Length: 147
Image (tube, rainbow, N blue to C red):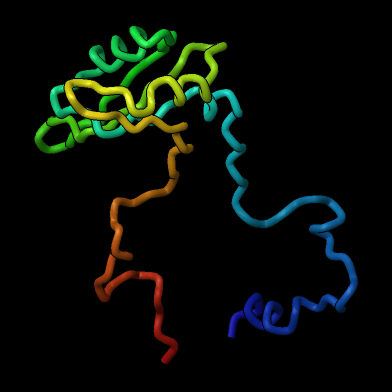
């Protein structure tokens, strides 16, 4: 057995109720956490769903601008392999625009005969590897046998 494992197994020699060095100094041995995104970044983005597949970044931006909102950027998400629009996108509103007013004003509006779904965009997930089913397979590399 490794010494570190034995110490962890025994509770590293700490008695219950005794504060550790970590709690006194605020230091931790783990990886540093990423600071949360500023609230303004999260609050100014719209998710726009049910877009026609012919929609481009500029046509989406023009649609939102014509509805009376100032647009900082618009992005229609495209398939990596084919380059075809996937039917949804994101619009970042200019500073000072009211997000809730934009959602209320754009949700349900028609673009090329399709009723759009507009919501506040959620923060982007980090650390997504692209495997939705847990990866599977036998050789994951992190399991070691102890014999």
